[in-house]
Image (cartoon, rainbow, N blue to C red; front, side, top):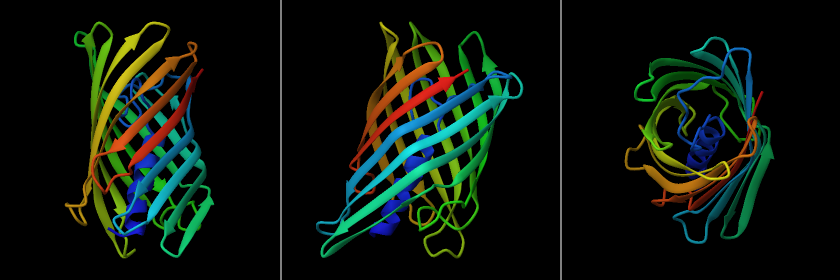
Length: 259
């Protein structure tokens, strides 16, 4: 896999993480919506992905700062969301030189509909269609409109323990820039609350694309979420790549602020 293709995987992973609305994990979406008349701002203070390409001595880093999702509720089961990257940068290092670029990322519009709830089980499921507009420059995104559908699910397992899963299908511009490929991602998490407003969680994800199914990528890791106040949360996660197609390490620090 060449470096440019690898960076597409990294960028996809960063953007999906940035646009998530977690309760106890970062990649796996929450099926719950924001209450009508209320707002939720989720900002990744820093997302850093690092990896080594198959080519000898080739490495890459991808950094996103202030990747933000703003949500507001329309009804008890529907909200609308706007996502954007205030700063994105990637850097390649290879034998004989290096290359880097930075700038604003793409702009996304989403809506979430919680189509199923079961109060007895403490479970819910939702569907999230979205569209991404090519507002980035200098090769940070694509020059085409992209979109997809996300389906998250979550359930209360008792004693405060929660579990959830998600499946998504994304239509992304191919590397030849002459059509679209399908990209699939599945993820799951389990979280347990601790004293002092802290929740620990573990999460795993697997992604593949229609261009080459053998180019799958997997990551597994964990994190800690601290409920600072009723309106403010801090969340840190560390993911480890499971194969050469995934970033070796991905660090994310996120702030969730609701009012």
